[in-house]
Image (cartoon, rainbow, N blue to C red):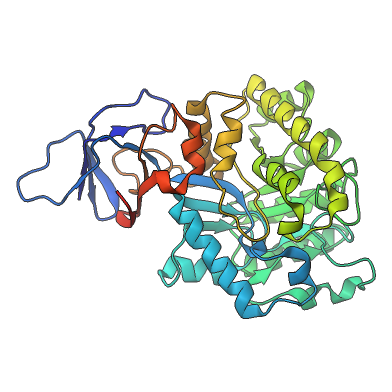
Amino acid sequence: MWLTGATVVDGTGREPVDSLSIRVEDGRIADLGAVPPAGAEVVDCSGLTIVPGLIDAHVHLGLSSSIDASYRHEIAAAELAADMFENCRQTLDAGFTTVRDAGGIDNGLAGVVASGKVPGPRIVHCGPLLCQTAGHGYLGAEWEPTDLWHQHDLPGLRFFALPGDGPDQVRRNAREAFRRGASFLKMCVTGGVVSRHDKLTDTQFTVSEIAAAVEEARARGTYVTVHAHNNEGIRNAVSAGVRCIEHGTRIDAETAALLAGHDIAHIPTLAVLRLLQDDIGGVGLPSDILGRIGDAYEGMVAGLLASRRAGVRVGLGSDLIGPNQDHRGLELVLRSEVEPPAAVLESATRINADILGIGDEVGTIEVGKRADLAVFAADPLENPALFDDRAAVVLVVQNGRVVKDIR
């Protein structure tokens, strides 16, 4: 298959190239710039813009329904599954061909998508996230005994968090996450915006507890990323040897330099805060959480810019939760308000692929890479609002196969 006539933005940071043909063979990019021979299968992309398949490095596919209702057992398992499947379909439809799930699913959902039974992106996931008792990630009600938490699990579909305390229990939970198909580990080392039982200023897990998870991850050739909103929690995580920071609210210059010095990546997540502020009830969360959002948004922008100045690898994640996760591209729009759109696209492609450990397979349009491509009706670098317009994503190619075509 040949895609011809489009302007190609390859994700490497190089300038766009007009009318660059792309030859796809056996699911990979086989050639760039050649002329299709007579009789070749040609997809005419004249006037369109091709970018690498987008990557969202922080999703929660397991939280695709109204959150409180789902944890009160008010939604049938079949409906929870249907909501997750629809979320996967919408994500691919928006041009995201790969996602990193940062807590909430096990290998069941990833498996049915990979098999082709459900349309969706390539899913790299951590299985259940690791949290401390009553820490961020524990969504049980105040009256609910902690030992009943696992009654919310749906094996093969949703398994949101594994609470545990002390290095030994953290180690056991890490091994359980790997048993459930995790390819990396996620820990919560500070309080969170949507937490029930903590504050953003709280630190969670000790350095020795985080280090136990890091040791288990290294034993499997992978890494730990951490949910973190304050500098003290981030520094604890750095001391323990983690490889990535999620959110990073109010990262200061000193902490940013620490991340850069240890080659630790940073994934800001602006879209979830903006959407929660607009309609927290629609997500299925109580309105008293709103008080945390404004400061968190401003702090996250400040942390993002501090990381950029320090030379940290800055990826991109939306962190969308609840139903109607149909604005995954909003993250690129919001990021483009504070940094150049070309840098934002690179975060959502090459840099994210590198952070996920799959940079040799996806993230750029180069010969030998998997043919994951998102094709826009116009240039999203000139008009970043297109990133959040699914109708503007007129063609999506995943693993060399056309999965959407509304040209």
